[in-house]
Length: 195
Image 1 (spheres, helix red, strand yellow):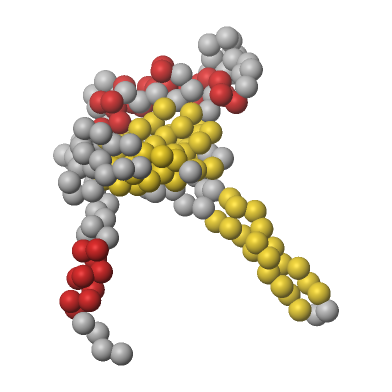
Image 2 (cartoon, helix red, strand yellow):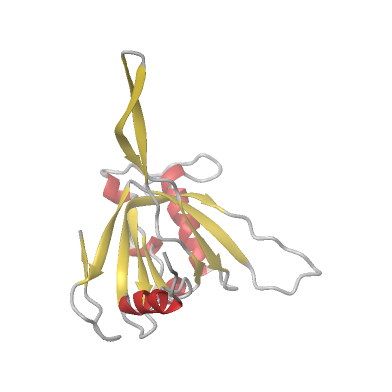
């Protein structure tokens, strides 16, 4: 079979061109506005990922042979890297969310710290990762459901360093759903339908 570069270029152009990992938006929503990232905080999410999932095989033995059948679908943690602002606004929101989940470091639990959750919606949030096109329109989106922070990364301090501070946040979540652009969109109108 002959290989033609023009075939590759044609196929790539048919799909609108190659997707770029630097063209994305992230919207992190905590269970309340207090723990949700604001529009300006979401801009500070330097790196994220389209969430992954795994469908593990279940092995069934029969007559000396092992047969594989689809098992449970599982979802690993979702990680984001956040640029730290001097006021640490986004970091403070994650700290507040984690305090609500686990209580203060002293072990105190009150109505506002480590309080009783009436339902999962009292502590679980969501996030939307949107892949953008080169024209600024939303192409695909993934909504991460029922998530909460499990790990807040350290921030390294160093007198000899001249870089901007950043840290990672790991979120546990139950599942994600995928959304596609419902109609051709413009930068002012991005309609995503989740399935």
